Length: 175
Image (spheres, rainbow, N blue to C red):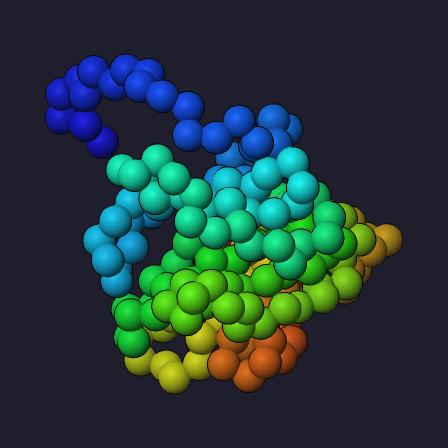
């Protein structure tokens, strides 16, 4: 939150190749731990993720593994080993974890077998546990049990499926 008005003003357009349709999770802005530079990740019209260095206003790479409409992309830092990751998901219900620390190589690709669009993905790096987790989510209804809701996978164990959380069960545990 700003303590006073930052007086933001339009300066320039970095790209004109972005997909105009989407949600708030189809781009990400972050400062990299490894080089302290600001980056923008945005999906383009060809189902790729374009990565820009913000202060230089230039594209450095286009990640081209997705074959369908990208629904979400997010950045995560593992504070245990300081590796940086992107996680993205598309309309083929595929989740991809990109290892930023290792030149944006694909660390893992998971077919979630959902029936509905993936709305969000998280990477969880618990401090007192060796395992790291992937959590994916979509809507759920009684006719698609096991194919929707939230799913938990192990990041360290090649994306091994751990558990399915039906939204109703998740809401009861929160309330």
